[in-house]
Length: 137
Image 1 (tube, rainbow, N blue to C red):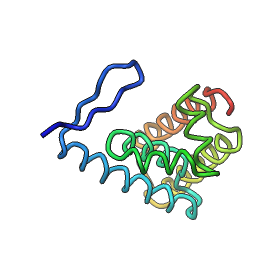
Image 2 (spheres, rainbow, N blue to C red; image 1 turned 60 degrees about the horizontal axis):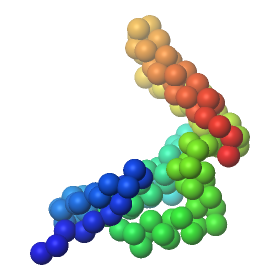
Image 3 (cartoon, rainbow, N blue to C red; image 1 turned 30 degrees about the vertical axis):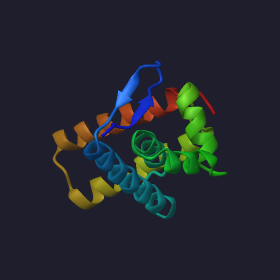
Image 4 (cartoon, rainbow, N blue to C red; image 1 turned 60 degrees about the vertical axis):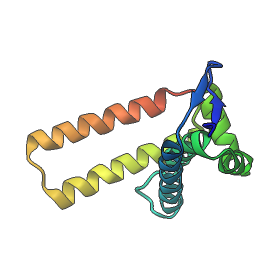
């Protein structure tokens, strides 16, 4: 039985077993569901989960990948991310606001010790700086 083959970005062939493809497909569906949930919850991101779903579908289901790339709202974001690592300014704004709100809820709800609070703040700040450093889409 022939294993599915797909070209990677650098032109080499990627050969996946049916088990790996099934795992990637399940992860793609999970990321897509998290992205949809994130569209309705203010502290949960959407874009990163949709980008991850496209990555998993690219390795498991060309049909689902094509549907995501053809989506009028998410397709252009995925394509710009793949081409240049670009994030739209509006998505950057919402991502940073979500991180601030998430940190505030963490602080309020968990009452962390000083070292945990500092560690989480450093992680959130590094994440925000990464998002802000990406080119605008």
